[in-house]
Length: 144
Image (cartoon, rainbow, N blue to C red; front, side, top):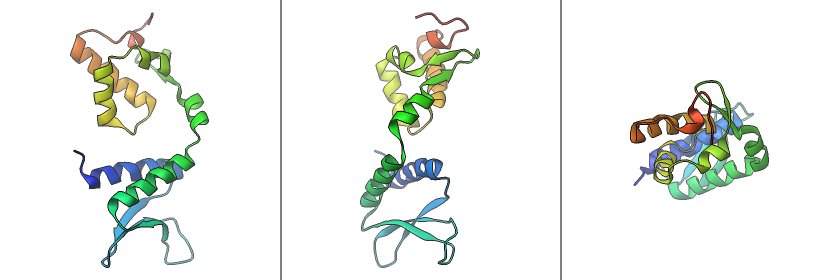
């Protein structure tokens, strides 16, 4: 089971990538958690993004904010292509369709959230290690 602190850190990092802000959590001595940003504001250089009574509730709010700020169609269109180690442009969605299900899920659990490019590279390496053969889309002249 994932450590709640690690899970929160991953969620915050993903939101930081979207917003460009440096974010951190603050646990109030009187109870509850806050997500704060160091982006300058008129009040002591910090501002609250959201507050929650528990860490789980804060994680849920961070996920909701991240989903709201992530334009799904634009991300899919923008990042559906990856580059293999030979510089060939590969359709990421097509490559995912021929990945080994177990290996893909294992890597997804370890790496998410990450870019499609990072995931493709990690999968190609893991595929080579597990099957002792290069992943077809990662070859110099991929054919599938």
